[in-house]
Image 1 (cartoon, rainbow over the protein chains, first blue to last red):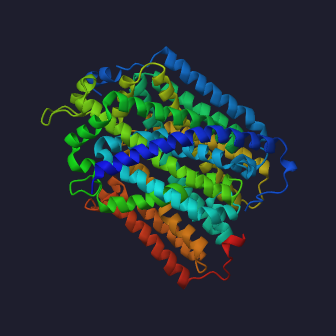
Image 2 (image 1 turned 180 degrees about the horizontal axis):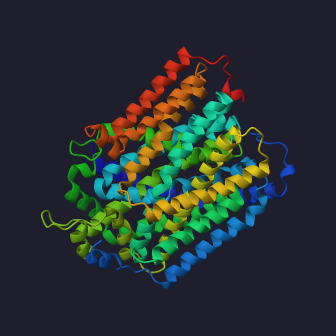
Length: 53
Length: 520
């Protein structure tokens, strides 16, 4: 088993995925914060909770 | 520390500009945390953010919480000593999180049970006694677990900023950081924690990527692998090689700790699962977070390896070689290798970049502290104090008590960080203190969620059996003459004992009526 090749491949793939995740998390996380703040300002407005459960 | 070592640690490129970057970042975190304090109306919003966290915000806060500065430091130490072979831990953590996300194993039913803490689930499924006992063990193990966070964080700051570890400046900085975290955590609870975690996620993610790219470009991709091979040989790549620092029992133990426990049992991670807006969002969060659960170990290991390469085979790090690897028989004591990463970063990174990385690492420090403070204080209030009181506690009283406990925990962390003079075997200490809780919790959670015959007697026996993890601590092993057993072997035996007792006591002492959990 070529351990060097395994760890090299893992490092490259995971760093690439992490870079994508950082960008996506930054953008979509900001949208999630906006939704959270809207809810916290008017908690009574959303009586239907966990509709996706 | 010798004068030569102190002088070498102060050769950093950290400048005033970097200090300003760090100060701006800290001010931003405090401002956000304080601004949202008005939203903490009751315990559900204070410790659960009204269960309204979306997938990506969950991903951000999960990375912020689970990638603490202490994780970076001890992982870098593992990479420094174990080389690429340590990557197996990152691989196990990532694959386990992906499987938990795909199946919803443990975290899915817990979210459906609509509890705020793990011990609260114990009461729903078993009894109030199990909740209180579970809360005490969880809080005890968890609070002990964070005892060395401040001490390790201060070593990082000494190494990267060149601050003297002997004078008053370092304690002042550490007290300041701790106070800042305490203020915003106590004021806004989980809402503050989530929002500051988001900022910390952004700073931390891009900081990790920038620093890693600079290390590779400076040291050279092939040179990093070749030097590791030359210095560590095969054991630097193969975790089960004969002369490896790891071995099969260690790898198996990592499936339990870094794999199952890290994402599905450890309370700070589970508390994130319980704040998600739906089970679907929870599963998606875990599947995406499998990347960050891999990276939170892999990148610090890689940084530790790069520090090794810098010290062993780089002209700029030549003076450090004699300090970290003094010749045998010279009588010189090696500098603590926890300093290897920050010293390396302090010499490698240019001004501004060093400020960003320092801010990122302080982000890691703060985002872990805030979540831990909130998690343990919530458990003490909700699962120990409130159930033991004869009169029910109001929501307002619970929030107030949780805030007081947060400050008490801050005082404890300060005491341990500044005055405790124990030995610095960080990983062993953390694994054993954490295992006091999770060795029993594995059996109780899996048994409670997936086995109808699991009983309160079985849960209590498993929780107590899990405390045998303490036998893995070096001083206890020496006391009992158990040095021939590794911490991993004792940990695995303890997990097995808890599982066996859960089954035996549940079958011999069943509850009068067992409620199916998923209908809670």
